[in-house]
Image (cartoon, rainbow, N blue to C red; front, side):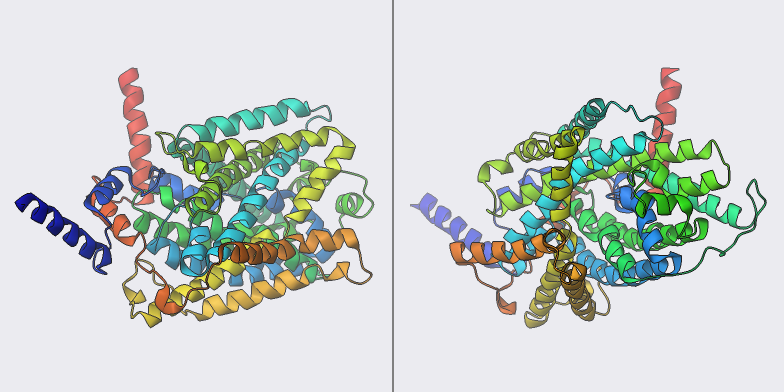
Length: 548
């Protein structure tokens, strides 16, 4: 009898704990398991500060900033190009402010995908999750194709099957074992991107003040602007960051410390990488350069080759011989890194869908090292589409696929803004003091509202040229994803009977207590990026001396 009373008392106590707003810990066993693994699901927190910050700096930057930007320069001119990047990144910073506050507080698997489903409407999480996933997996073969084109700078007889097969094999090796391996690879690959930008910016500055074989201090001589809108549409697809950074939050050590720094790094990424890159190419090459005209207007050349890069064109115009080969090698590593990031994010987004019941449940299976193995297996089917480039007829299919996914990134930002607005309204309705959050987004919710209106305008207008005269192919390229996503939303809503949550119904605690428990139980305190790098290289040096 006493045992049954004890048992009933324990059950009562556990029931009260589940309802308690103070802890929201579902059970002692669950909380203990979370402290050990670092997550309530199968992922593991193995990304150190050193790795995470380089992922935030360089992840997802690929062909656009170094190659495709030449076509936009040719069409829009340097002034419009820089102004478009400046304007768009101001609005992107507003969205980063939203994403940072939510992610640093709630660094969960699937990030904004699950937040949309948990804080707004399950149907919203479903449509944005599949939108994000489809974009990632389509871009992977595109990046592999871009890599083969860049390598053609050295020879037209590049063994395409070998390049495709080699990329796929490396993507498997870097992603199948543990997130720490992926993080280590991205640390070095993203370091290469930083080195590339430093070289290119130094090259721009030195040559514009006369440090070139012709001793021509050309300064801003090439600065003129024939157009703006084309550059703005290009900027909207080139300038990304918050969504990719957030996907790593569920595998970051000390997430509320390191993710806070990572999102601050994204602001510097916008300023230095995006706006700096747009400024540099406009200084180096006139928009009507003969090579740019030949490639983008006359069509006598391949826009994906490294030879189409404004930086390479500038070096050749100045009769600089060795540096183009170094830059081509670094651009190749940059493109490979972008594909690697897409593999990682696609795997985690599909895993997030499965956790929320928006994809088959078997996809939640993880290895002992925390890799969603079935999600990864499905993602790795898509890189094989890169072999389509071997035939001119099937290469058209690859172009068609990447064109269909064009509007996906803007849709992600629209959903992020909607999710933040819902989160902010819930905080206000429930008396939740946002000032106590580890990252407090200022000027809210105005950042979210302004970002939302801006991105809606972009997604509605960027395909305006396809309307008059009406071009079916261009129209589908511009508006397939903006049409498909609402269909997914309505379909899931009708099938599952989901509900758009009221502010009072939003669960603001969710996994927050588990994350707090994990951070408090961590064996090692958070360390700064420079100290983390110093410790890493010092450890390597000591190991080398011991081996010697």
